[in-house]
Image (tube, rainbow, N blue to C red; front, top):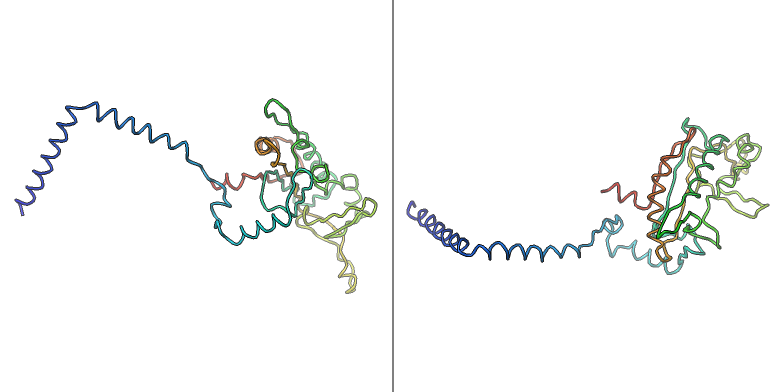
Length: 269
């Protein structure tokens, strides 16, 4: 046993001695060549594509959802430039979103609270970015429907907020149609934590839509057109400025949570 172990030790010692002599006599080959090979192989890092899209990472490539999404895209194609429809969205695209609540926990359908929401919306819409030495506002890069930017219809009631608060201008929930403007408002898309009036006791009246009494939160969405040339680059700049801008707006009566298309991906990282 001692002789067999000693044999292995001598064999390894002899091999390392030979290897050391070879390196000592030809140092250039063992310094320059590995360095050159490392540099050459390192250039392959330029070909690495860093994938951080949660949908790609967490859902199967051949999953049923992908097939159904493809079918929807075929039957209900989205045109961000002139025929944008929120109901047809299957890809998140680029956007900014705010979920707004009153600091005192009360209804957002009050004059002082609603004024701040409208003020915040106006600042966001007037915010500008610089891309390729040109200035762009939301109206320049927004997703459009019939030539007009997607709007948060709930803000149409800014002039009526006093009457809504007092109850003299009732809004039926969940759907209300303004017959003067021939426009329908689907309130669950904008209001959260809604309380409705339920004063009637008859079965027939209970089946009819109720009027909104209060709402705990408002959701505002700002969709951007990424299908035009350089649209995604401009939208990315807009999202970054949106995140920093909303935090700098002085607000007394409301607080909010903010989201953009990259928020989930960033939080995962």
